[in-house]
Length: 439
Image (tube, helix red, strand yellow):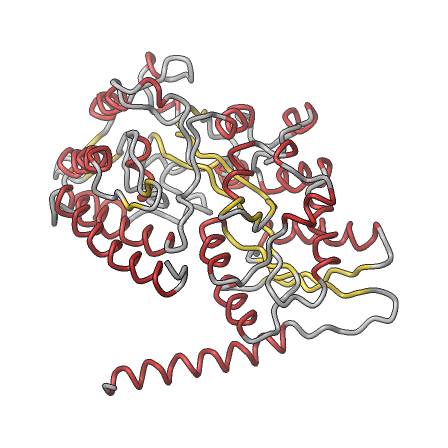
């Protein structure tokens, strides 16, 4: 064994021991003689954390058998996995959908199917696209806390008169590209002053561009990162590097403010359109409430009208780690969150759409996002999609980020970048199937 390998194993051991000590400290169950204490770890902070705390407090007041102890935990995914391995996990863990399949394959969370069936929670209760994303290899591995759909947000004040309403905005990607050429502005020295659109802003879903062009990243058991549709999408990404200049784009984006601030590039007028989630309305309301904006489905390729109303979906999910001390009581709390009134209150507080099949008119009329009906419709669209259901999803997404960066900075051509990503992920996938899935 090399010196580096020894050092790596030593570091890993230190992390495991530290996590175990930390887990014992955080999962400390202050005993109550009157109730069962359920420990709930969640990733949210700030206003989102406060909204979930309201739900927890309301639940604790609603009955006298269970007390949920809510803790905001940074790095909740890693700490939950390590605490589970150490035999001292929380009873409920709020993680991202992107991590659900890895957690399931690692036997770090339990199948909720029996408890959900007994509680009457089934596919009829949820929007199909959200429910389907939670079912994997014959099990139900989580239930939603808050979901989201993604659209294109637009500033009408930066649009020409023929594209400043949802009805007149271009429906196709080719129409969007032409509009970007018309409205983007450069300074005399060639620096970008305002970009009509940038695929790299905010850059959170680089793995998904191929799907917007009709592609897939996983087809059955086969990885397809370098499929023709994905190459076509990355050729489109490359066209923006050529349109503005890759170095100019990097320089321009280095001056962007934080998205949760008045200096957010969309709110600050540096970009006229932006692919973003339903939650964007909340940030606009807080940091730039007088801003005029609207949302539309992201445009589709002109030769693929069948892809109209496609949208990337995401979810925050509630899971029960394997080895939880009180799984029955933990599920009772999760079930409470699934109530229509509770879920709608939480989703309004987070500025998101509801994952439930049934949505009240009150939800739509009081929601802070004035385009909430659009985001609800996109969540129900047959063309909406969630991340691929594969245990190496985080690594797959990372490789697509690498390929995106290589193309957008003109270091590699799309075919080469995606081919290289495919090669790297295929090797990882073969190892994962052998060592984790025993295939």
